[in-house]
Image 1: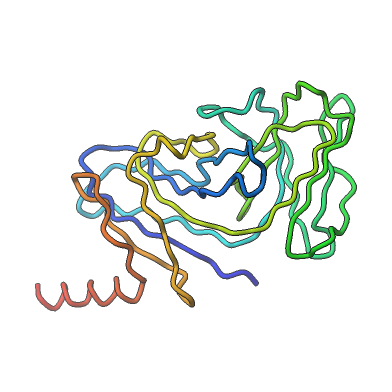
Image 2: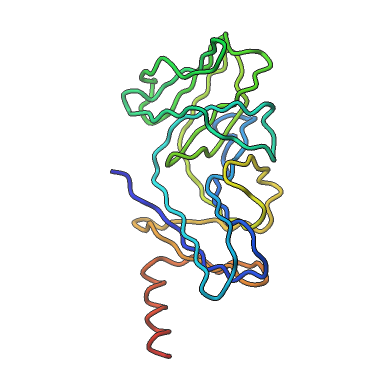
Length: 219
């Protein structure tokens, strides 16, 4: 069973916006791949406002009819596939519509493989994606006879702004992202977004509980 990770954000910003979690290593899968707003929630700041995101490290595949894949468009998966070590390879095919087919085992059970047949249109209107915890993390334009191999190296970031879930993003334009680093054996982090849009260094759940206890005793 996969461990459940989480991050809790105390939102004390000066304006309302979306809190967004994303990953930033798309080109390890494909040079033209882009990141998506993996998880996103609209939040109104206040002294007691908290937003929590949870996920598990369960990778998968997705595809969507996106048109040209570029920042600002929305990726809404039409089909997803959750691989197993024995069936970590999938094929995207086309017969008047796109579909996943031919679930099989790739060369390395620790990697994920996606093949696209020669029937994929040259000017494809579809994009393929890698998912984690059921939501698409990265996407790239579907192309005929394209073979993609993905080696998982999750890296988590938190940002605040106008980022709706499933939106394709340009990570180079994100203002003041916070990297979320989970120490070994730690699966829950807490951070605070301040009024000047600065982030408090993430702390573990145990540290957050201890801090809360000290505040209660001091009150």
